[in-house]
Structure formats: C-alpha cells, structure tokens
Amino acid sequence: MRFKRLTSAGAAVLAATTIAACGSGPDGTDSADASTGDFTGRGPITLATGKDNTGTLDKALDEWNRRHPKERVRAVQLSDSPDEQRQRMIQNAELKSGEFTVLNLDVVWTSEFAANRWVMPLPRKAVDTSDDLKPTVDGASYRGQLYAAPWNSDGALLYYRKDLLKKAGVEPPGTWDEMTEACKKVRELPEGKGMSCYAGQFDKYEGLTVNFSEMVDSAGGTVVNSKGRPAVDSPAAVKGLSFFADAFDSGLISKKAITYKEEEGRQAFQKGKLVFHRQWPYQWSMASRTDGSSSVAGKFGVAPLPGLKGPGISSLGGHNLAISSSAENRATALDFVAFMTSKEMQRKNLLLSSNAPTVASLYDDKKLIEKYPYLPVLKKSVQNANPRPQVVRYGDTTAAIQEAAYGALRGEVTPRKALAELQRKLQAVSKP
Image 1 (cartoon, rainbow, N blue to C red):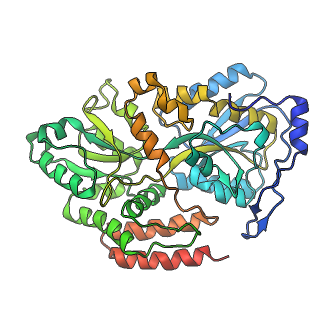
Image 2: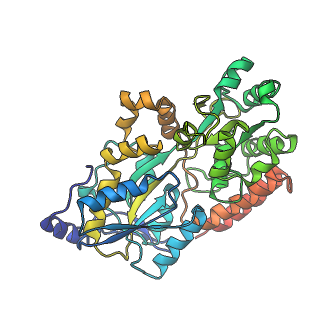
Image 3: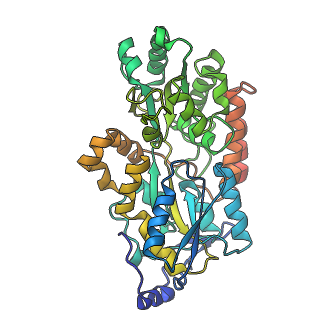
C-alpha cells in the first residue's frame, strides 16, 4: 500500500509534526501555519461520497471491514449531483460536525476545502505519490501542500460507433469539422437513420462546467489564465462555445441533450441513439455488458476528444480522499485512505468499474490493456488534461459558468454576449 499503517509511536510523531506550507484562510489571506494536525484515534469512521452507480464501493468497504472489524467504515451516500454533494459537505464542515470522517472530493474542490481549512493537510512522511500521474497530484494539492490522496482520475474520451464509422468509410475524427462530416455519412446509412450525432453533459450542473471548459480549451482559449485571472472573453472561447451552440441549433446535437448528465447520455449511447458521446471511462464496462442492458456491446471504440484544429483537451476529472478537520479517529481514517488509494485497490477498481486509476504504472500493465484497450488513450487524456478553474470561490465560479454556457447552448443569448457577461462575473468573484 502507498501509505504505511501508523503505529502508536508514529501517530504521536505525526500529531506533533508541523509541515510548513502556504495556506489561505476563508478570506483569501495567506497563511504559513498549515499543520498536519493530530492523526491519532482509532475506531469507526464514515465516508461521505456521491452515489456509487457502478456497485464497486460496497465491495471495497466490505473488504476493509472484514480486515478491520473494530474500525469499520460506513458510507454516507449523498446525491447524484456533484453540486449537491459539495453543498452538503460544506454545510457539515461549517457546523464543525464529526458526521463525516473521510470526504470523497471532486478534484476541483481541493482549493476551496483547503483554503477554508475544512480538510487537513496530509503528512508527507505518510503519503507516497511517486507513482501517481502528475496532474492527479496537482489536483490534490493546494499551494504546494497535499490535502487529499489521489484516488481515481478521469480524462474524457470520445466514444464512437466503430461499426457504423467503418461501414460509412470514415475514421474517428480529430477535429470538430471531421466529426460533423463523419456523422453526416453515418446518418446516411440505413442503420444511422434517426441517430443523434453527439452528446455530452449539457444540463445546468457541474458537468456543464466540465464540458464548457473543454470547449474553450479545445479551441485554444482558457477560462482562467496561469495567474488565476479570468480570460474567457476571447475570440478562441467564442469559437469553442459557438460550435456547440450552432450544433444545437442545426440539429447536429439533439435538443434532448440539453437535459443530459452522465447517466442520461450513457443510456442514450447504450440504446444506440448516439454516433458520438463525450464521456468518462466508467461507461466502457457498462456499455460492454452482454446481459441485454447495452445494444452496442462490441460495437464501439474510443478516441481522444476532437478540437477546433486538432485533438481536443479534456478537463481533469476524478476524486480524491481527504480527512475532515472535524473528524475523530484520524489514525483509522489515514489507514483507510491508504487502503482505498493503494495500487492494489485501484487495480481492482479498474477491473470492476473501468474507473481511471491515478497510479501511472497501471496504464502500462499489459494484462490490463488486454482487457481495456483504451488505457493508452486514457493515459494521454489524463496527462494532457487541464483543470477546471482552480479558485477558492469555486461555487460562485461554476455557477456563473453554468449560467452563461446554458443560455448560449439554448440560444437565449449569443456566445459572444454570454462570454462577455461571464468575464465580468468572474472578475467580480476573483476579487479578494
């Protein structure tokens, strides 16, 4: 395992250890007193997490509980909605409640939870991230300090009907224009009649922030620049958002897709209603089932996301495990985090659910590649992924992005006007 189980003596050392790291308080002011805190105490703990639609979480928890009958973990499964998950965790943190011990954080929440000291900085002595993909470690860190353990990653993949593309005589697209042309040829086939060309996650929720960031990045723009300043009102960003707004207007993307989150799109793809689908790796195993739940098993492939002029850029997805600052039994919590993020468990998680690991060496495992041929494509997707805006006031930022993108995709406002207004809102949000 990548963590070592803490002995009583080791826990005492960690309890007294202070790691010099820059932090930030809720008001955005810098602080250099981030401490690993007290990682003592053993006993039952809880894991606050979103709903597990793959059925693998219970298996992992059962294994932990079998090995640790006196330190059992109980999952508190929150909403399917990432926005609602985040809000529930924040409410719990603001109340300084011990209800949640370990938090399953979306990778983009790290800055907010760390800056507000809702989670504890993790001790470097106990955490080994040497075999993790660099973007996953960066996503678990804030101002150079690790605040969570990389658990699983996510890079977007373009799922496509390889059987229909082959029959139409076209290759997987590398650009948006190529995707448009490929879709037209597929829909000219008898089997392609009535199919929608493309879908992503376009409902007004966190998935739209992800997809919008990919639209902008894949067109050569950026939402927030390297200095953390809003830069979304640019010609490149207009081109990216305009392509998808026009696709909705022309029927290239079905009007129904404006209501799609991950699961709605997955179901549409598995029912054979989509030629192309922007989705996370977990869809692979579910779309490959031969129990009658998928009509496209064995008929699809994956490729990198297309972009304006070449390969697109994925938003970095994934989840990290953090320990609540209000939690008890932190020594148990640290061991549990070790167990869940170990190479052994990440390998099992990949085999059971096709979730993307954070451990780099798993992507090069020949046996895994034989079972999941998409792993090399996924590794590149994660390595080249861009994070969503890494800001302290992430809730306000993502709400503004969703409002602007949703209005433009629905045709209620032009992309240019939507981005100009979004720039103004993000500048206001980013002020100290």
